[in-house]
Length: 52
Image (cartoon, rainbow, N blue to C red; front, side):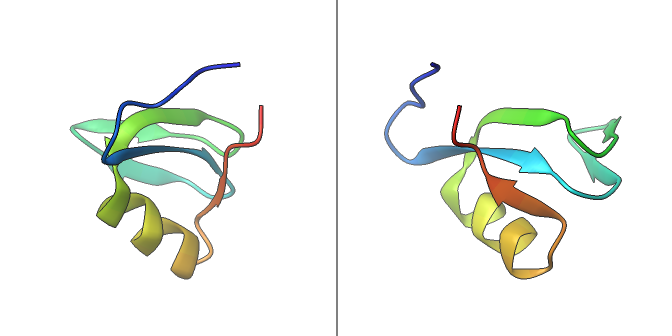
């Protein structure tokens, strides 16, 4: 299981996400992204918190 540094989060995408110049398809784990970005992705339904 990965451990995210403080102030960051890990999410699994549930939709196509464009982030940091890359396209993540559903099922991709985005690691060590800012917590604020993770919260927006989850709120929009584009990702779920990564549970390992």
